[in-house]
Length: 178
Image 1 (cartoon, rainbow, N blue to C red):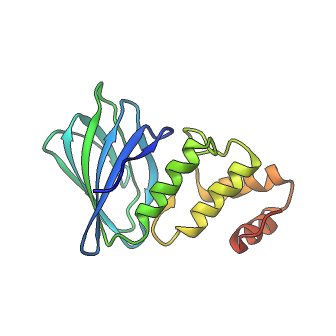
Image 2 (image 1 turned 90 degrees about the horizontal axis):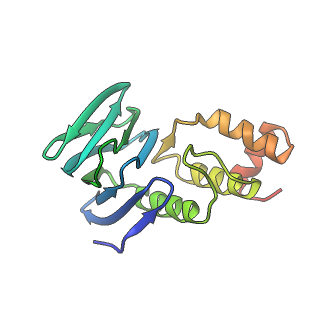
């Protein structure tokens, strides 16, 4: 297992390892901690709840699960979860294939620690907006955050930068700064 990666915004701690082409993670989620709605275009994600209670929303269906329960989101299916219990929830996760999801989660945790975005996933500043947009663009093959919708986020970034959204999008895609 890797060193612990802590995300103060999502209120989670991750430890990663690999099993062939799969990413394995042990995730500790504090009460109220969550993963916002997202989709993996080409990856299937399985969870096993080891401790605590968690509510998953998979393809719009809510399901509360506890210790010993397992949940799966197939590739292309929107999903999210929240620890709505009163104790730390511990989950074992398998993502197949791994892609670059570990890099995404590690970088997102780093940005959260730096204060680049808030609990709702909204940027805290123009610099935070650029960092979050670059992260989303770099990892869009593995993960697409659907809440807030990316079009809304890009419009917000465009307004923050006082540039048209199309120009902001092409600037972000090229990796250059305004």
